[in-house]
Image 1 (cartoon, rainbow, N blue to C red):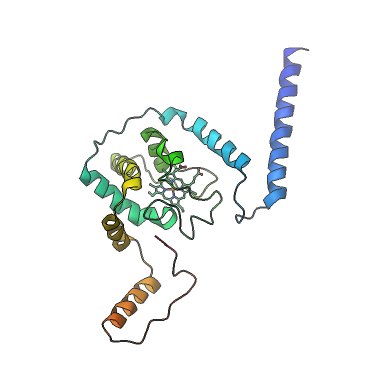
Image 2 (image 1 turned 180 degrees about the vertical axis):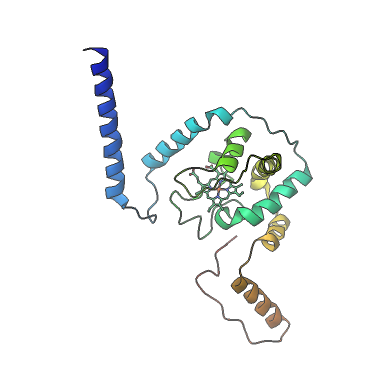
Length: 207
Ligand code: HEC
C-alpha cells in the first residue's frame, strides 16, 4: 500500500473510533451531568490533560514555602475555590458533586502527585470541558496568587480544625445565609423563636 493510503486508513479508523466512543458516551448518559463519567472516559480525559500539561510539568514554584504563603493561599481558596472544592479540598459540595466530571478530592494522590507546575497551569488556565475555570490573567500578581494556592493545595492533607474555622468565616455568603446566621445568633441570645432550618441551599458547603 502507498503511504497516503496507509495514512488515509489510519485517519479513517481513528475518526470512526472517536465517533463511536462519543456516540457510546452520549447514548449512555445523553447530555445529563447526573451520571459519573465511566472509568474509561475518566482515564481518557486524565491522559489527554496530562499530554496538554506536559509543557508546564517542570516549572518550579518560585515562591518559597512559608506559613504566610500558606495562609494567603488559604484565604484565597476559601473565597474563590471552596464553593466547588470545599474548604478541606474534599470536593464534597453541592456544586462539586454535580459537575461533570465531579470535583476530585484534592487531598488524594491523584492531585498530590501532580507537579507544582501542573497544578499552577490548571489554576491559571482552567480545564476545558470541565467546570474548572481559568483564574489567571497572566499578570505577575495573579501568577503569585496561583503559586501561593499551589502551596496551600500541598497543605490540604494537613489542614487543622482551626484553619477550617478560619476558612468558614471567609467563605462568601449570600443574603439568605447571612440572615440565617443572624437569626441563629439572636436565637442563641434568646431574642427570637427558633430559626427555620432546611432549604435547598442550606448545606451547600458541607465542610
Ligand atoms: C465552578 C467550580 C470550580 C471552582 C470555583 C474551582 N474549581 Fe478547581 N476544579 C473544578 C473541576 C470540575 C475540576 C476537575 C477538572 C478535571 O477533571 O480535569 C477541578 C480541578 C482542579 C484541580 C486539579 C485537581 C485534579 O486532581 O485534577 C486543581 C488544582 C484545582 N481545580 C484548583 C482550583 C483552585 C485553586 C480554585 C480557586 C482559585 C478552583 N479550583 C476553583 C471545578 C472548580
